Length: 106
Image 1 (cartoon, rainbow, N blue to C red):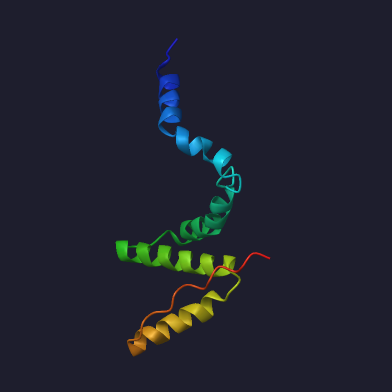
Image 2 (cartoon, helix red, strand yellow):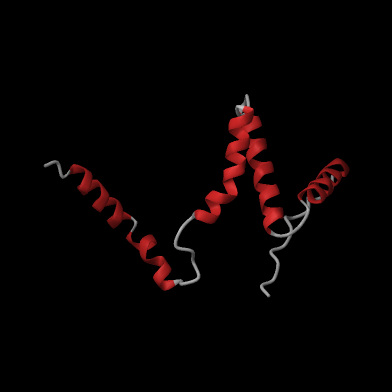
């Protein structure tokens, strides 16, 4: 019997022990990363359909836009309106606006 795979798993558990037990100390933390994976799903599909970008700069631009659009969507604001204000400020040489604020919990 080869115990090498089990040894690797145990080593990973020991290495990440604080992270594994963190939800016990902070019960509001989610127990999975499903929310993050669901947020990325349509962007991954979009990238696959378009066959990705053709440059490192294009990949960075796609990732940045996806992040801004997803953040605005989750914060209940218009990504297009925010991006419009960013572009207008950049053209005038003004300081770029921060991302929309996180809505207050009800």
